[in-house]
Each structure stands twice: as C-alpha cells, then as structure tokens.
Length: 318
Ligand code: HEC
Image 1 (cartoon, rainbow, N blue to C red):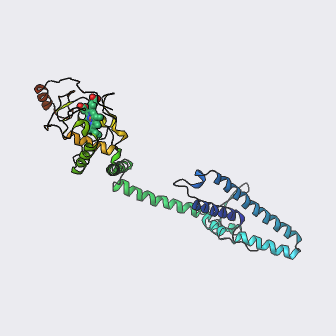
Image 2 (cartoon, protein in one colour; image 1 turned 120 degrees about the horizontal axis):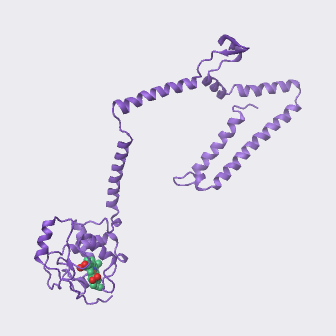
C-alpha cells in the first residue's frame, strides 16, 4: 500500500472537499450554508467523525497485519511506512521553509563555546521568516510611496467618495422608484407627462367635487391663494393622501392612488393657482404663505388681501 499523504493531511483535505461541495450545492443566498442551516454543521461534524473513524480502522488493520507478518515482511513494511512520511512533498517543503540542517551536518555549524556542556548551533535564519521580512520591507516602501509621497487617498477621502457615489445611486434609484415619495420628499412636478397624468387622475376622481377648472363645489376653490389645509406641494400632497378634516367629504386618497399618482395630481391641482374658473366658490381658509419665498413678496400679498375665515363647505356626501 502506497500513500502519498499522511493521515493528518488526508482527513482535512477530504473534509474540506466535502465542505466545499456542500457550500456549492446548497442555495443559501449571501450567507454560507452552514450558517443559514445549522443542521449542516451537525452533518459536517458527522463527516469528520466518520473520516477519523476510517483512518483509525485502517490504522488498526495495518497493526493487525503487521503482527501476522514474519520478520522480513515486518521490516519491509516499516521501511515503506517511513518512506511515506519522509518522502512526502509536504515534509520536503517544510524542511525548505525552516532551513534546518540535518543532525548529521550539525558539526559544521556548531559554535566553539561550551556552557557547562550546553552548545550553540549557528543556524541560518529560517527562510519562511526571512522572506516574510523582505515582503514587509517591500510593502512598507510601496505604502510609503503611495500614501506619503504621491498622496494617495486616505480613509476619509475614500469614505467621502464612497458616500458621494452612494448618494448618486440613491438618486438614480429614486428616479426609477417614484412611489417612494412621501410628504417629506415630494417635490412639485413640472414634467408635461406628469401633469397630463395628474389631469387624468383629477378628471376621473376629483372633478365631481372640485370642478374641472378647480373652481370648487362640494370641495373648496383651488384657484385662489386661500387654503384650508395649507398650500404648497407638501401640504396638498398630505391633504390628498390623508384626506381633509373629518366629515367634510375629502377622503384619504392613499387607499386608491399610488404615491406617485398623488404627487402628479397634487402638482396638477397647484396649476390652478391664479386661473379664473367659470363659477368660483368663495374663498375658504387662510392665505397660504410659502416660507421659502423671500419676505418682501409675502408682505405685499398680505397687505392686499385680508384673510377670510369662512367655513361654508356643505357637508359632502361621503
Ligand atoms: C367627495 C367630494 C370630494 C372629492 C371626490 C375630492 N375632494 Fe378634495 N376636498 C373635498 C372637501 C369637502 C374638501 C375640504 C376638506 C376640509 O375642509 O377639511 C377638500 C379639500 C381638498 C384639498 C385641500 C384644499 C384646501 O383648501 O386646503 C385639496 C388639495 C383637494 N381636496 C384635492 C383633491 C383631489 C386631488 C381630489 C381627487 C384625487 C379630491 N380632492 C377629491 C371634497 C372632495
């Protein structure tokens, strides 16, 4: 029987091959299979125990065989066994990396001092250590040149670029996911197609109470600057999605319309501002002052008109 690998290599190699196959075969998303399905760990443990058991059985079989051999056979067997361990490429690699001299050559490197019978060998630095050391020197030089001489990005700049990229990605995502808008993020839409969509939604759902020209009926007039529930895209969006005051007849349209549609119809509604409807309903609510507009214009408009607080809405059918 000729073995290329000793058992302490064989067992881990077989184990990791099986482990790899399991990870490959089980669909577990971005988590490793053994974390998603803990039962896999049990299975792997079982595999490990079986592998060790097989090695143990083979080992004891060899032992039994050895006892049944005659002297010559025994010697031959033991010789082949030793060869197997010594000739493994692994042990040769190990010797190369540690750079140790065989005991027979020790006389060549022994130093002459002798401390009460304790002698010292002049061993060379182990190659694994020496090459590791050279690699760190090269790494250090490259690192110094890149970050201290040629001013490479430090962590903060890297973080900032990544954040900027993420921000762009979020903007891109928002463009494709218009239904993510809510009261806080909604903006007045000015796109012709959005406004056309808004008009369509208005004609189907809102005309009955607000009239096609926004002049008002059951619902208030939306062409003037008076608003019961606040003007501006944010307030209008909120009114349309959450509804008006209880019992007034304006329902919460979020049950029926998607957020993107509410944004469209709200933007369309705001187009009525300043137009003259055929039968305008008397103003209701207060003049809406948009805080984002500069102060001068606000003063002018407040002086021109006095706020009228009338509540003549006939209770609409709900
Ligand atoms: C059943 C009748 C009815 C329908 C249909 C209706 N509304 Fe209204 N709407 C009202 C009433 C009544 C009010 C006043 C609510 C209040 O006083 O709280 C109102 C208020 C509003 C306001 C706030 C006006 C202000 O002065 O603050 C907006 C904006 C509005 N509606 C938009 C819409 C839109 C957009 C639709 C269609 C999706 C719609 N409404 C459909 C009856 C209606």
